[in-house]
Amino acid sequence: MNSGHEIDQRRARRLNLRQDQRGPVIYWMSRDQRFRHNWALLFACHKARLLQQPLEVVFTLASSFLGAPLRHYDFMFKGLAEVERSLRDTGIPLIVLSGEPDVTVPAYAEERRAGLVVSDFSPLTPVRQWKRNAAAALSCAIYEVDAHNIVPVWLASPKQEYAARTIRPRLEALRRSFCTPFPQPEAFCQPGSLNCPPVNWDDLLEMLDVDRSVKPVSGITPGEAAAEDRLRRFLVSVIDRYADERNDPNAEAVSGLSPYLHFGQLSAQQAAFEAARCETSKENREAFIEELFVRRELAENYCLYNEKYDSFDGIPEWAKATLMEHAADQRDYLYTPEEFEAAKTHDPLWNAAQLSLVESGVMHGYMRMYWAKKILEWSQSPAAAFDTALWLNDRYALDGRDPNGYAGVAWSIGGLHDRPWSERPVYGKIRYMNASGCARKFDVNRYIASMTSASQATLF
Ligand code: FO1
Image 1 (cartoon, rainbow, N blue to C red):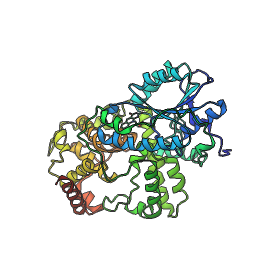
Image 2 (cartoon, rainbow, N blue to C red; image 1 turned 45 degrees about the vertical axis):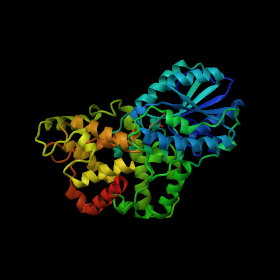
Image 3 (cartoon, protein in one colour; image 1 turned 90 degrees about the vertical axis):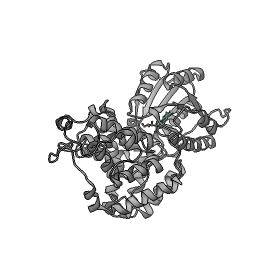
Image 4 (cartoon, protein in one colour; image 1 turned 30 degrees about the horizontal axis):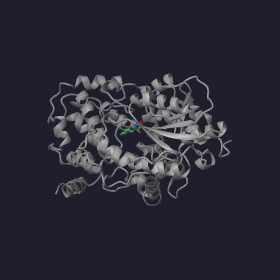
C-alpha cells in the first residue's frame, strides 16, 4: 500500500549491477524537467534519506540534441530556471554539465564520489546510448525511473504493440496501481550542499551553437507553474467540449499540454489524476485519458521496441509493401522539402497548417494528420515524405523530437497502429484524407483565415 512515503519499486530498474555506495546521490535530470510529481526526483530523494547523504540534481546540456534549434532551448531553459528555483528553495543544487553526457556524468560522479545515480526514462536512441555508456563507465549504481508515464513502458508490454486496442487492456490492468497521488518532495529530501551559484541561463543560451533562425514562440509560457495553470484551465473550462469538438481546429477544444509534456514540465500522471476527478462527462474524461494515457504510452512502446522509429523502414511491413507498389504512381503535385517548409503549395489549407507550425510552434492534432498525409501525396517517394514530415515537425513543433511525433508521422504516412483501407493511387492502402473531408468536419475557410492573418500579423 502506498503510504504516500513509499515509492513503487516497479517504477525503477537498474542500468548496471553495481551496489549503492556511501556518497552523494545524483539525479541526472533529462526528460522530466520538473520539481513536483516527478518519480525520478522522489526516488533519488528517498535514496538520499535512506543513505543519509546529500542530493544533487544534474542537467547535461547537449548543444545539438537531434538538431534542436533556438526555439526549443529557449522554452526548455525557461522551464529549467524554474526547476532550479524550486530545488534551491528545498536546499537541492542544480548543476549544468556541458558536453557529451556519457562522458560528463561519469566524470562528475567520480569527482563527487557519488553513492549512486538516478536517471529518468526516455526511449529515444541518443538518450539510451548516453545511458548505456554512462552505466558502463560509472563505478556506482545507476537506476532508471520512468517518471514520464503512468505505467512504466517496460511493464506495459515486453514487445512492440500493434495498435491501441492491443495495448489498452494491458495499460488498464495496471492503471489503478500506478495512477496514485504523489508524496511531496520536501518530505524526502536531504538538503544538499548549496555552495554552487545559480545557473546563468541567459549566458548558456547565448553560447549555444544552435540554429537561431527558428525563433522562440510567444504564445505559450514555459515552465511548471504555467503547465499546471494550463491543465487547470483545460479541466475547468474546456474539457466539457473535448469529446465533441477536439477534431475542430477552430474550436480550441484541445488541452495544449503537449509542449509541457514533451519537456517533462508537467506530469502525465498528475494530469490523469486530476482529470479523473474533474467535473465533466464520462465521455469527455475517457476521450482525454485515451489521448493522454493510451495513445502516449503506445507511442513510447513504439520507440522503445522499434529502433527504426524515426525512419520509413520502421513502419509495418504491409504498409511498406503497399506504398512501394505505388511509389511510381503519378503525383498530381510535387514539392521539395524547402517548398513545404515555406508553405508554398497549391493548397491553402495545408499552407495554413504549416504556417501555424512555423509561427506558433504548435499544430492542431487533427490538422497534423492531414498535413502529414499530403506530404506523402506530394513528395517524390514515401521515404522522402517520411523524412520531410519528421524534419519539419522536429524543426518547428515545440513538442518535436518526441515519441508522439515519431508515432504520429509513422501513423499518418506509414499506417503504424492503423489498418489497411481501400486502395488508391500513391497511398496504396494507407488511410486517405482530403480537404473536402476536413470541410465536412469544420469550417476550413475560418481556419485558413485565422492562420494566414496571424502569420501576416507577425510578418509585418
Ligand atoms: N535532454 C537533455 O538531457 N539535454 C539536452 O540538452 C536536451 C536538449 C533538448 C532540446 C530539444 C528537445 O526537444 C529535447 C531536448 N532534450 C535534452 C531531451 C528531452 O528532455 C527529452 O529527453 C527527449 O526529447 C524526449 O525523450
